[in-house]
Image (cartoon, rainbow, N blue to C red):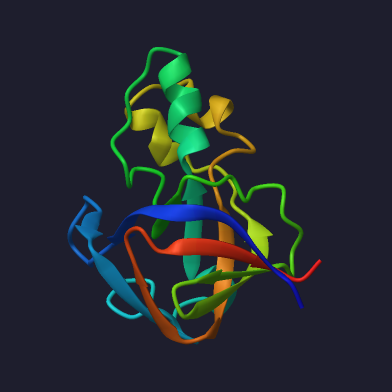
Length: 148
């Protein structure tokens, strides 16, 4: 199985119950139930990790809108766009393996900043993954696409 370097981790985020803003972290721990300190931990394994690309934030910026990092609800923000990856593809980030499970649907909460955002990001919000090998991911870790 080949490993192809495709990008790097730019930011990491978690959500905590009762806190509306995403919390930025330097590193996160992952296990087969999800992101260890996230409020969605052990809720839905198929949607346990949300991965987004800087391309989403750049798309919004190209329309003259500003959106803070983490606003898409992502746990992992990459400088690589994984949105075209097929379900079942595997990414290695740090010592963690993540399997793509589904493409992320758009949420209406994104309209809080501007009503155009849900439409602009219809197919460009992110992808969900499940953890198939526990590990830690830190900002600046490299991202590898496994298999061809």
